[in-house]
Image 1: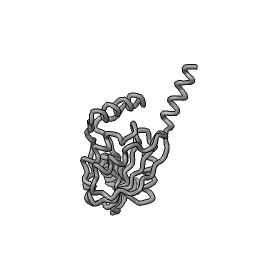
Image 2 (image 1 turned 90 degrees about the vertical axis):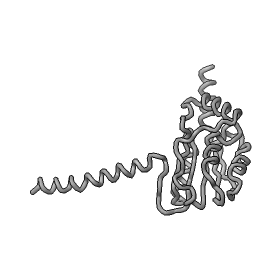
Image 3 (image 1 turned 120 degrees about the horizontal axis):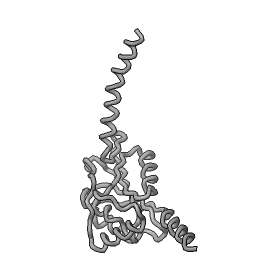
Image 4 (image 1 turned 60 degrees about the horizontal axis):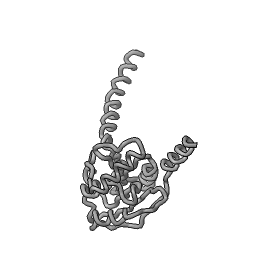
Length: 190
C-alpha cells in the first residue's frame, strides 16, 4: 500500500514539475507576467542599481517586468563598457535587442528605467524606443546616474516616443561602481 501511495504522489508531482519548467521557460525572455495588469516596467540595468528600482515598482504596481538587453552583452569591465558606450553614441550605433516586448499594445502605462551613460541614455535604450511604439502610452522614466544628472536623456525619450505622455522623471544617484573603482585605483597607486 505504501508503495502505491508513493507512486501516486510521484505521478502527481511529474506534471507539476513539468508545468513549473514550462513556466520558467516562458520567462526566459525576461518578461515576467504578474497578472492582467496593463502596466509594464521595462528596464536596462548593467550593475543592478536600476533593476532594484524596477522590481520595487513592479511589486508596488503589480506590473509586468521586462528586462531590456542588448543582443551582444556589454563588457563586464566598467571601463570597457564606458568606452563602448561612447563609441556607440558618437557613431549613432543602435545595438540589436536580444528580445522584444511580446505585445506592447496591451499596456497603458510603462515605467522605463535605465542608467545615464556619458550624459545620455544608453544606446540600447534608443534601440528599445525605436523598436516599440509607445504612442498613447503614459511613460514614467526612472533613471540612475553617477552624480552628473540626467544629461539629454529626457530629450532622447521625447524624440523617440513623441506621441507618448512623458511624466516627471524619478532620478537617483547610484555611482557605487565608479566610486569603488576610483578608490581601489587610488589605493593600488599608493
